Image 1 (cartoon, rainbow, N blue to C red):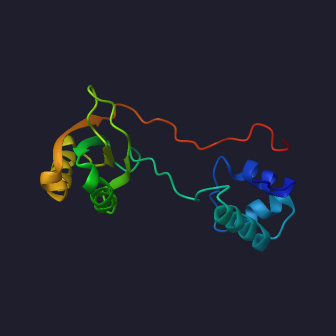
Image 2 (cartoon, one colour):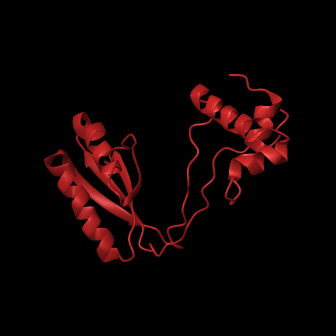
Length: 162
């Protein structure tokens, strides 16, 4: 999949995040000597082509007071995992939810859902809500609590001209 030099410059300019201004696309446009419409149009075209997947916020849950964050892991029947995972992913307290292959015999879990709350008790209550959704399709679960926040980044272009 080919992109032109302007798209590469646009990716390089935004890969660390959009500027925190009232008009972030206009600001990026100024940096690149483009119009705001060109920036938006190019980003949309790259999303449509699959060059970039999405433009999204990555909140710092700790700064928002959610310090008891846990990755819940679930052993869900394969036939129901995709459907039930979609339900879990729609919950307001789940920031991301995805399926992964099991690593048997040591790791039977195939559904992962990050749960957020101010206390472990709150997260455990939310975990119970997830368990209720999964019902008898779930054969087991665990939760891995975060001890620190990790920096979240996407792909970085080292050489925008490459």
